[in-house]
Image 1 (tube, one colour):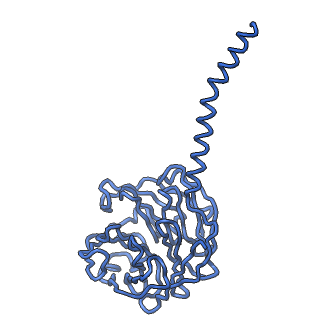
Image 2 (cartoon, helix red, strand yellow):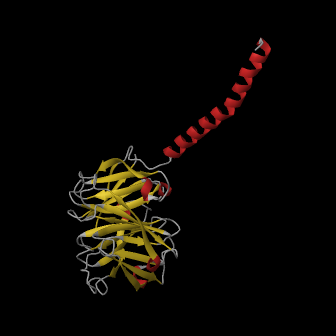
Image 3 (cartoon, helix red, strand yellow):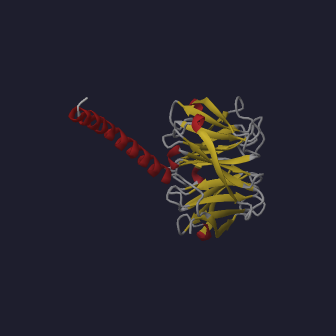
Length: 296
């Protein structure tokens, strides 16, 4: 090949390869940017803020929040109730005071399952509420959004066909998927709902084995658009973090790392997370309090 043709040959290969290299660089940068938006435990510490819930609940469990951070709700197992607290400064536990409660004793324990309330979720419009009772989910409507005194029981679903000892749960944003932790099975279940938010239409889809990490799981939160799953482990006294390669697809989950909460409670039982990932909250059964963890 003469020098001119040789130059053209190599130059054309370079030109052809360059767009591919640019594409690979762009995809790598996009991936890094996406990873930077995922929830991590970096810089989180106990804020010093806590909420004493000993007067209203006993053996407190899961927490959930009003979407604007002005109210927090917690289940009490021995008191068979859901208690709510109003915050004058959104998301700051030090500003919370008790506001109202809902009695669960009429429903819980009325079936073959004992009264062992734990998981709690309220829809972002404040008009629907679900409470988990080991192998059951109970659904409620609130005629006055977010106001527990307006709560009425609607239905319950028996999940014992695949749940052995569930505690906490979470929905995806459109209500078509439900995730349930299972302490005895050492797993997390993924369930699909054919009608959004209607748990009577649920169908089991996938079970994730977490036996290599789990001791006693009692809390679950899906964050970062379904690409991060957080599990609370009572025995380990840690929050466990998992990465999902495909959002809300448990089959793509892998374990990442942990955050220790034993400095505040020896018996953590509930977990909730600020929607902007600025804080997370742990219920401590032993000291009957909820603790706030934040970045400085």
